[in-house]
Image (cartoon, rainbow, N blue to C red; front, side, top):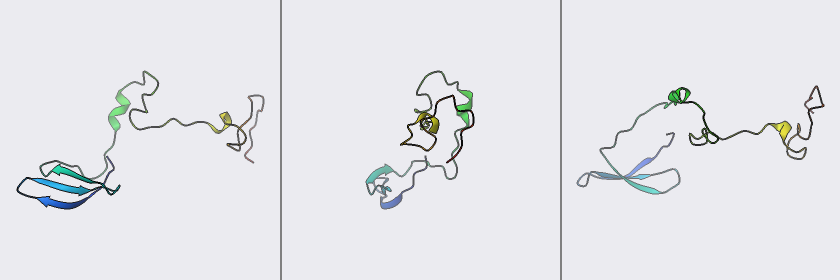
Length: 90
């Protein structure tokens, strides 16, 4: 999903094609493969419950860390405790 390639060589006798990937690698695939053009959305994920840690990692989504939870060296909002009522952007 989201990849693009260029036809490098087509062999009609063997029904194969050599594709050049964005990483400059060459990959041999069958010509009879089907592809879909356009946007591929993952709307079906809203029907599955999040039941364990790492559920979204399996689907390609990474966890995000809040800036307040980081150290002051790593983030401008970091190092604060919950005693500060109104956090201000420096």
